[in-house]
Amino acid sequence: MTQRPQQYRFHQGQKVLPFAASEYEARLGGLRALMDAAGVEAVVLTSMHNIAYYSGFLYCSFGRPYALVVTATEDVTISAGIDAAQPWRRCHGDNITYTDWQRDNYWRAILSVTGPGKVIGYEGDHLTLLQSSKLESFLKPSKTVDIAPATMTQRMHKSAAEIALIKHGAAVADVGGFAIHDAVRAGAREIDVAMAGRDAMEMEIAKRFPEAEYRDTWVWFQSGINTDGAHNPVTARELQVGDILSLNTFPMISGYYTALERTMFVREVDPASLKIWEANVAAHEYGMSLLKPGASCAEITARINDFFAERDLLQYRTFGYGHSFGVLSHYYGREAGLELREDIDTVLEPGMVISMEPMLTIADDKPGAGGYREHDILVITEDGNEDITKYPYGPEFNVVG
Image (cartoon, one colour):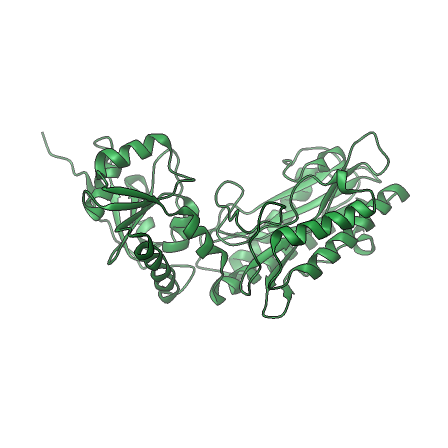
């Protein structure tokens, strides 16, 4: 019987990455400094966000595990045979393909890079119990160290190249917003309007980034009662005159998420709704004014809470007021240390990117029923912030159809 390989290298085509090689070398340099500080000899990254951040490769799991192994001298992505050479073309550094011929060839490929008995860094917020037991069995580490919190802190501080890409993403989100603005009319379905926004964004991404891979861009366009939750999926509900709407565009560019979110109304807005809407817009503007270096997430949150409480609206707030941007999506990634919540003490610094997105949800049996949300993306600068969202907010522009 022919002996089939456990792993091999399949390298063909030219490498195409979102950033220059120097960007990835700088990120890996930062990771290796973290490894040195923690006494870690090899890191086994398994999450989509960290693998994409340090290598440029954004995997499609489909039930198969992936990894990026980083040592003092090597950075190697580990990918499944079904992907052929695409992971190598889309990653910085080396790539090993593992085969399906024998179970756990994935871990044998990782072992070929780390060697046995090393101090291994892992992602405690991603590695499953099953894969954790296999890490112990195959790598036989002398010690394991959860490296996830340190990598999150590194990702929170954006490079100039990252900020440039995020600005492109914000501009693409605006393009989707204007397409939705034009598509809103009584009788249109949520799905019809959502498709107009998504198609416009995908075309714009292809124009701006002709060598990129195109995937995962989406729209949540909600109407009426469907606006009560920030993440409610699109339906086929038909828009009616007087409906509250929630516009949410989410372009994805090489794993980088950006967003535009706006309250809208179909053709007319009643007085009770207008009062809530204007209060939320005021909170949005106030919140953006607080995003400055030296301010803590908890402090900003407390001040916006006071703003709403003074207007007897705080009880209608449903979640935090903003979050970090970078390599993340609705199904992977999170920089939980940079969220505008009461329990986050992180202090804002230049180079961080964060949203301001207050939301009030009024129950369906009350005047002004619906979910009100405005959302801008802001880059923290040396003396304040730069708002990179340009689509207008408020009643003057967003009573449409």
